Length: 512
Image (cartoon, rainbow, N blue to C red; front, side):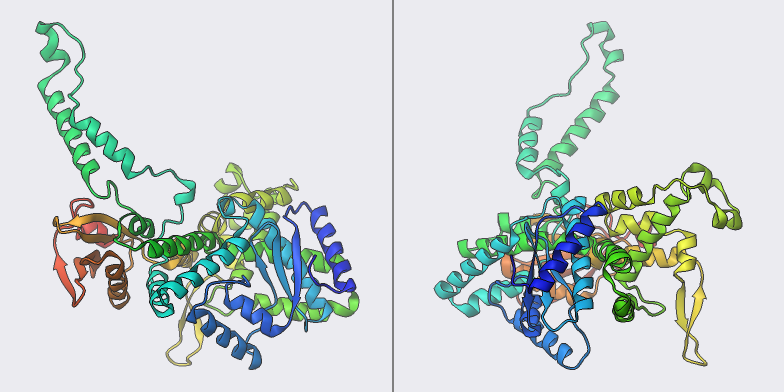
């Protein structure tokens, strides 16, 4: 099981048993001992030792290698969500660092196995990605490396156009909508049985008219293509774009990989915080000798270091888990505590319940970063962690607190975490103007699109759709339509949106 030395194997067994004694539950973990250049290579492939050949992996390897050589960064831990889990230890690490990494890894593995947002991820992705690499290599041999690599470049430019919530929600499908439309086209308004002289009272004409209009509207909606706005743009392209068989296969593989990595982006703060939460307990209570405590503290503090105005996911996550554990241990929850508006009473509130450990395990199981931050960042936590709005003093050039309203920081943080900070784009019409053109809409929630990047995205979509593509957005409170027809990119102001989404330039949207 791995290639560990006897000393590291004994340490692995000790750490595993300690983690289980605290209630952590994880798949078997296989540790591999590697040199720094091997670790950089594996990290450049996203943690997987075998992937398809692509220039971006080489670029990432060069970046990691130079950063390590110049002392700018060092990879301490790398763990893969799989069954069994795979983790890598750098051969040159000191024994204290190996202990810390092992404890940290078991925290990650517990999170991978038990967090609800990882429930739909493949637990055999190590094999799946190796198979993807083999298939793509065969396509390169058959169709040419440059052609396949260029296609992969296009898909990579679009791989954030997925619906990260789709594995957890049944949004229906177009086939069901078409069936309903066919059924609706032959339906008549169902009247309540009544005698002739009572019919006009029991089934008034106004009611029948409203029902007919409602049914006609549903039928028109069902006849749209797609029947409802499609947030999973890659799935829509996979089903409907005029792609060759090998292109469909490559697109399907890269889409599968995008969905595998999505939960890691959705739980970055929680996942890292949970791992730090447990490695700090295991190291300080069990694994660290007195002679190792200074080195451990140096490494641990470097991981949690942060500057005013910045968010360190390790620091934010672990402090929030500790805050939750302390709150529930001291009874600082429930209707009575929430109703208390005296800051001093809230600060000294102490009604021991010892429910903290159970609560953090519950939070680990059901939350993602957005809900985690939204629910548990309290005024007390924000004050303790100095979550303020910072700005630069024009006279001294130093950072200073501009606003102490933690809600503003919280809103900015939630906006950055929603959809990984990317704009939400949906397909609303695959046959725009009855010309087979693709029409997408930017779901505007307070942030304008970066128009240059949006135009590049349209060019990528055009290469797959092979017909003109459009995206509707809001810029400066006004509707704007960006288009690309294969030759020229255009940007025009619009006053009315596509019928599938209503008015784009409404005052409500502009003020959202």
